[in-house]
Amino acid sequence: MPDGKRIEIQVLRYRPEEEERPVWQSYYVPYTDDMSVLQGLQYIKDELDGTLSFRWSCRMAICGSCGMMVNGKPELSCQTFLRDLQPGPVRVEALAHFPIERDLIVDVGEFVKKLESVKPYIIPKEPRKLSDGEYLQTPAQLEQFEQFSSCINCMLCYAACPQFGLNPDFTGPGVLALAHRYNADSRDGGRAERMEILSTEEGVWSCTAVGYCSEVCPKGVDPANAVNQNKVNSAKDYFLRFLSPKGESK
Amino acid sequence: MKLKRSNAPVFWLLFGAGGMLSALFGTALVFLTGIATPLGLMGPNAMSYPRILAFSQNWIGKGFVFAIIMLFAWHAVHRIYHSLHDVGVPLNAFTKLICYGTALVITVVALFALLSIGF
Amino acid sequence: MSRYAAARKGYVRPMQGWWRRDPFFMRYMIREITAFAVLAYAIILVVGVVRLAQGEVAWNGWLAALRSPGAILLHVVLLVSMIEHARSWFEIMPKTMPMMIVGGERVEGSTIMRTGWAVSAVVTVVVVALAWWARS
Image (cartoon, chains in turn brown, blue, yellow):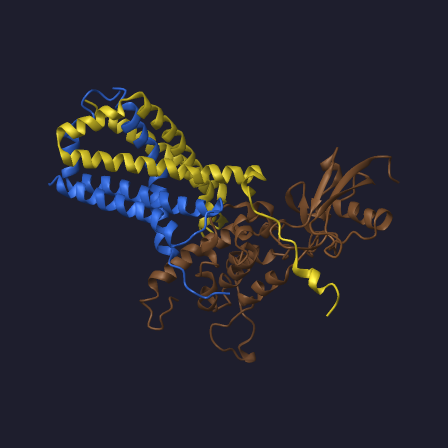
């Protein structure tokens, strides 16, 4: 039962068929201490204004759908609590650096294309037969990439990254972390193929080590580390490519 | 998605070397040459002409001074170049020339000056 | 084509003044600005080396310029910038390094950072001490 507390939630609305530019709209939402910003938005949609549009799914910080700016910071709304934002107002806006489609919904098409571009799957080092059995991997080998496999594609790191904001062609922290997840996997042999993306200006070289991406990541992926580690790898590749007969460093 | 390999590694390695050198030695050097010696804390002859000349005529001294000047310069211009982009200045051949050109001029001038004082 | 298709171009928000949006970005900008101090000092040094090459009178002129109140004030600013450069350099350095495992344990980024700060402090003290020992 709501205990009589209300908080103001200001949402940046945008309905392209109705208005030229986004506009702030205020709602007064009764809340309890266990309510997340997402639940606040759901209250608005259910009780106050059914036209409010936003993405969500799992409500437990694993699907990556509900990313948005809460008081100017990239957050998962299901994991951000109204009690921590007292007395309000809570300002909610679509994830920064992405074009707004509608209300809190951003255009993620380019992000998906970038994910596909880094070949996010094990590329075997040499052809394997089924009779070779499964790959064996030690805990130490797993540790090399496990953290980077935690990414839930929530794109908070993109909202945090000013270089992506300034240049949407930048591959970006999340996708580069995903590329690193495979490069660092002992089962994988696709490093040279992925280096074609990493070694471009839009690959790791747009990064200026701001580091905010790793600050906002809800899963501890540390994309800043993935990207900047690969500056060393890219530099090695750049200089050592002349040594290997195939023109690639191994 | 463009697939052109970037030449950034060259500048980035210089940036890194200069950044590390200045992070380790910058504080002490600025203090010594710019504050302690001018205020007389290191004695009246700490940076006297004969002393510094002898230091710089020596290969090791030359190398040290050259490394400091050159790497500090290349570190700084790389960062400044990217900061210009951060504040909305377009990155083009002109800005690249101004930034990295400055470091090149500093490098060449330092090289000539250090060689011309002889051994 | 849906009647909404034309409206789907998406609203792009401007990036002007992005670094004022968050204290994290402000600290980043301060870090980046330290580069001007590093450049300024490199220029001061290269002018010094040129003066050295031009002979004793020129060199003493450079030394005299360093003794002016303006020059000393400038160097105080440069000193503060160098300290901030060193601090922020080792703060970000762990991000550039691959995973380090020592004795079966993962080395934390904060450990690398603090080690860097410690080395920087020790080197500073050692260099100043050596100069003091060689003073004349």
